[in-house]
Length: 429
Image (cartoon, rainbow, N blue to C red; front, side, top):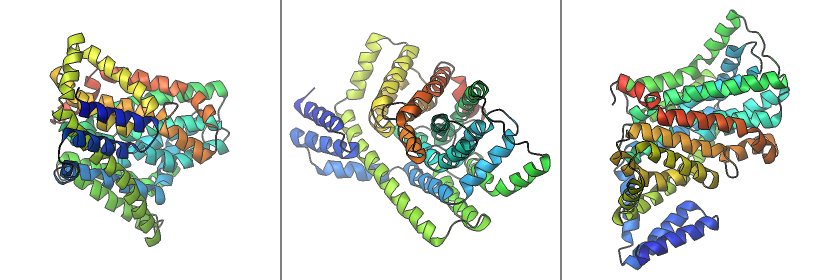
């Protein structure tokens, strides 16, 4: 390691421990590196600009963020919750199951865990609390089910992984379907056991006529993932174009079908989206500079050689990666993990013969577990904030959902067919 690289890493560690914005830290690190290396500082700005001008896929990220904001402002999230509620009927702990099913449906529209927890989560927690469910349990299951957002297609983290790895966005989206369904089943088993143990109330019995009426009312919202995913896999749209269509369709549904979106609301949505996209864009651009430094210093290849010198067994490598990301997920934001550490791991995974679609879904799912993991799990803070529930109570309740998620993670890791079966069947691999 040369002096410039040591200084870069030292500055980054210092900024991390001081809890300064990570994106700013990465830019400062890069500037220190180029100053000590004697390079041209214009490379920093050039690298950021090139990241956006040469990558069409990345445009999908702001489009899906915009779609999520429209869904949460209009009545779409309420319709999704109402539809899921009619499906669960007289089940014990019905609203817990509704929470999970609604998140799965919402995942097919936005691809964002934060949007799920902040928008749909508020409706779910309030409804569960009114029916006699413990608030910490309601918050924990809301946080856990929000993980379905970035797993089931479309998915913002999978779009970013596609940009980093050069893999097919469509194949990654299909690869996330089975993992999301497996997690849905695992969480519903947990809810069933807990509901019986704590005697949570049953849902209201719904007759077929009511089910048809609710389905008809909810149909405009439910068609969103159908239009989006069908357009991608039939070949009519790219994922980026699908993001634009989803955003436009969400506006039509909210404004015309449900009459819940005014021009003032739309303006506020645009401002919120600009704010969210700005933060994300700075992070991605800063990560592009770090990736340039990593490539220039051959850090990825050196780490790869070190790991292979320990063991060239791909299953050991996957175990090591899972363990490291689970630990990192407790300490830092998932976007930092994805944009800094994952690009270093991708070449190693490829060298060991690991399918990059499988690797991408496993790593993404692992990172999403970090959103529910104390002490810095973002979903825990969001659910605590919207419900005014003490964080320590939610942390106590999230333990078993976390166990369920880790079990699912290891199934995905060591049974690759759970991820690659559908992409292979659809001819995308």
